[in-house]
Length: 227
Image (tube, rainbow, N blue to C red; front, side, top):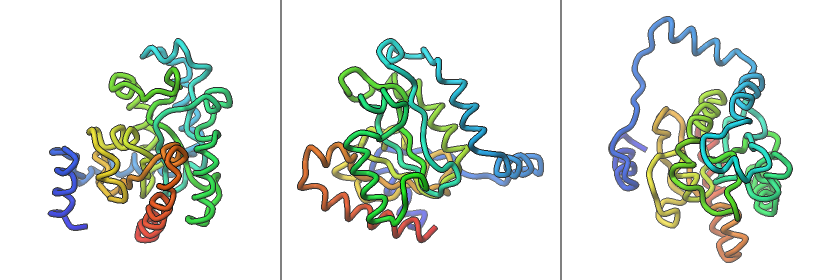
């Protein structure tokens, strides 16, 4: 995708500003090299310690626990969902319910990977009551955690599962039926590609859309191979 096409794609979903990379100073380059060399597992554990007692929004009142990301922090691929559900809230891991089972199946059958070879997280780390959609305020309070996760992992591709995940990553409201299967630059680092598709939970409620989701995963596989 060229610059003109990229700008048109961003404008289509309402993004009019992006952060452009500038030439880093010698000190900044040294810091980046150090970050790459550090143990990302350690950095993610430290990040979780900072957030596990979070009370920034009202979700802390009903949650069982904060649910951090899970998987391989050196993976070039990060999946981002909406928020933990009932099972995730109990177990403290993302995507362990029925939607997670479908996600695992697609990762194995289409991407040829096991779940532990990718990294999976959510926009919000606490379960909203009744599994409702997180509010904009709840998403905003959780966004520094998600942003830092991505900064630590430095993936090549972020796959957003559903509209809420897309909103959390791109910072704008969108209709997943219009943008699914498309690729956008990550606003905080345009070198990272953002791919959007349906949330597995949506497909479980609408089985006829599983074929569409599978086709999107085929596109995702091609995108990863190009990076």
